[in-house]
Amino acid sequence: MGSQKFLELNANEVHIWSASLLEDKNNTDYFYSILSEDERERAGSFRFSRDQWRFTTTRGILRCLLSNYLGKMPESIEIMYGLWGKPCLSEDKSLHFNVSHSGDYALYAVTLNNEVGIDLEYINKSLELEDMALCIFSPKELSDWKNLDPEERVNSFYIRWVSKEALLKASGKGWLEDKKEFTFNFKNDLRKGNLNNEVTNPYCFECIPGYASAVFVDGATLHPLYYVWDQRNFDSGRREEK
Image (cartoon, rainbow, N blue to C red):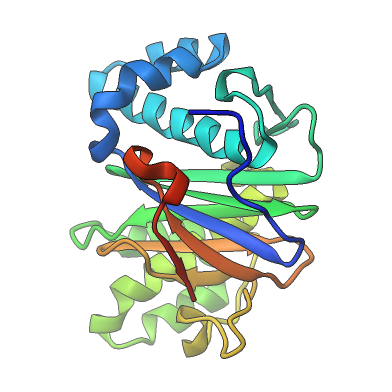
């Protein structure tokens, strides 16, 4: 991976990248080589090898993506952590990013000048969602959710969940914040954004079948551009604009 800039990020855009971690499993050694020492220690702290390579691949792809925005070698990028553990760049304060992974997939969001949070969750229909809803939803949200038709509850639950996670990750607090303190007025159009192709906050979208995802940009309404990570042909990677 070279240090030449690949993508230009405009101030009114949020770039959303999806990556299949399984497709890059053979590149784990390379990704490990570009991690920082603390990232390697964190990878080694996972008990199972499956979690080790998932973390290594997720963070390696992140470094490769940032490399192409910053024009720097991926291993030279310094990533620091905020008060509540949110990763950020130590040098370029105008470039903001966030990462989420679930199962064998990862999502990345990159913006200029505005904090961003992104969340990805596998839609597991076997979970006891009502118990989880008690921990995540405000009383009003819980009431609205229970009044839905049973066949709508699973998708609605995950839409609300990823939306809250994205907002809290943008704030930098993530799971440290009480999710029930935030109440969203969920409308049907939240599932698809609005007609102007601009991000609503939170903005829910579908880019990986069987997964729910949302992005939240603090203080801005931005135009989303979608990309698919492919290291084999990264310089001309597939791009889909919506």
